[in-house]
Length: 504
Image 1 (cartoon, one colour):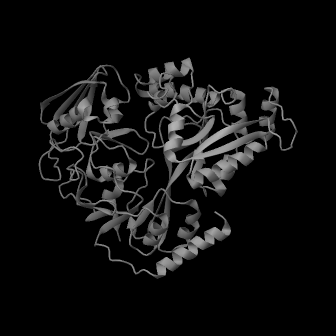
Image 2 (cartoon, one colour):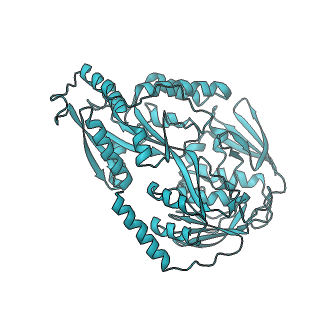
Image 3 (cartoon, helix red, strand yellow):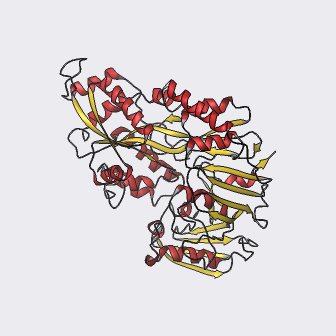
């Protein structure tokens, strides 16, 4: 954003703000300004991020994750794993649903039976196909019998539990969570009130409101005039200095799990050459983009797993900007610069991106940085549907995307295994490495510290092979009224800490 454009935005915000009076907010009710509302309120069918945020208030799973993604009890107070094929869960007693009915093992079984039934077309069915059968010997015991060993299985049981008999895609969801939904006005707001029988204790807040405000300028205005208490990702980095100067606001940041990368077509003559990918990795200046465009809301990445995870392996090959080394690699590989430092390029690559303004701006910076190594970039910007369809088809040489909220390294099999090429997986670059195939298969059936060792080896191989050039991990950001205490900004952006929030 240019200096004059930035000034114009700030002036516009000031003029709009002067035309509005702060509206009254219900007592002890926390108001969040959100970009979009949930696609649906049924966790058995929903996959979008906005729905997930509502589920954080409404539901619990059998287990939950700590900030480092290790696993803790939730609706299950304990469990036993027998031969890594039988999982016996002992459920909490005296847990109540929002309607006052008691939570039992029958509710758990009903949720997973629904997801596993092909007729219901749940997008989560693939995650749980490893289940052979489910037993409920009594109201407070659930037994999962698996078809085969599956290390990610326990972590997948964070899946939200709805009351047995809940209708498909209900707009009146009944869960066990700290808040219950009392009003949903589509595209306007969701209103929650505290669940007085919540098993972990009554929330400090009387209620929470998700106020749906699609336009960021208007969300900013709403925050500044007190109509909402907080706004969170996405926030345009250029607005942060403005927020930091406001004595009524505080800016909270936390390293997240979102991972941005450059992907390559490994079957293309140019991008399939490791020398080309390594030269690109060395020619890019990540730090300057993070500092000047992202305003510090990112950290250079070394691979798909972020330092927020206990599976992170930082001791891998990294690529700081080194133009001379990049040029030397290309020279030795036969990609001679035809005119030294002149305008002629060694070769030109087609760079595919969406029409998002920030992504287009970053693409232009990449274009300039790579030109200094003699690499030409032809930027092709498409509307999202066309762009994403091309990526899945392999219709690209080079592109950039972001993986959101990686919690378990089992995703490596989905991204990099040679059997995971679309449509059966997300190996969009058609990467093939037999050792990675073996490691990702082993990781799915290996437990404890040995599992971490498996994925440590995988991360080192991937950093050397460069099917992706790692860019950065996003830093999550929330801007909130200084009267708010008790809120924790989680690495995966969940809102579970709202039960601890207090408004002074």
